Length: 331
Image (cartoon, rainbow, N blue to C red):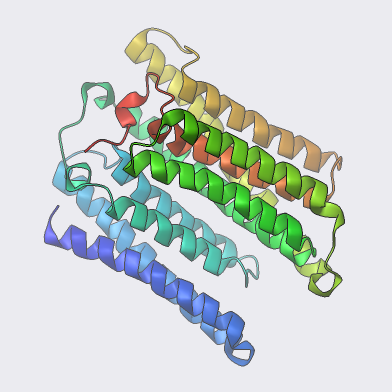
């Protein structure tokens, strides 16, 4: 990578960390809360602009569309999370979502920075990725994943504002188990069966416990107006991500037919993308027909976020294999 690309990427990463701490500080200093939130959003905007420039610069340097490996996809994901939050914050008063969005961007920057230099350097495309379908198929998927993450983060805040503190903590355990499995699968040689069990078992156990814990309400934490606001944000984020995921699946089928002579082969990652699509389709159905409370819908959104993580990163780091294994992390 060139020095300018490194500088722009580091600026974006540092901005995400700084904005996180300013958002956190806004919760501690109530008298300056609004000013600090605006300052944090401005810092995040600087990071978003720097990351946009870094991605464009990488495209010019590589002389191709800069989305072909894990590192580049992480840059796009962080870009979409930052941009998605900034766009939603122009419509909604998202006082509690900012620190979660900036923390998510910072974590994915850190995840990318820990990849070996060989993964970060610009290299020729592997044969499977030499196609115009790559820039048609992949960007909608990455942006949809980011919007689903924003929806899941908003769901955590919705549960908190609804007084479901126990369910928030148990859902956080489920997410931590899933992300820990991804991290261990990327950077260690831990047995893949253990990693799969950690992700699936931890996710299911945490979410099930959170579901049954919805009856426990901390009355002092309840803010019905804010809970309704974040329920709406969850829905809006999913309604942005869902059609993008649909486009990604359809274009993936067209690319698969072009490359392999079949629109659908039940490859593990294809199947997981379909499962994720069905999960969010279920959320939309349940919400439109008012068949679940807002709190239960929030848990469905958090479950969708875990499906998204598994679809996006799980098949590269948990040993599921398949035709998409060229995306696997390698030294």
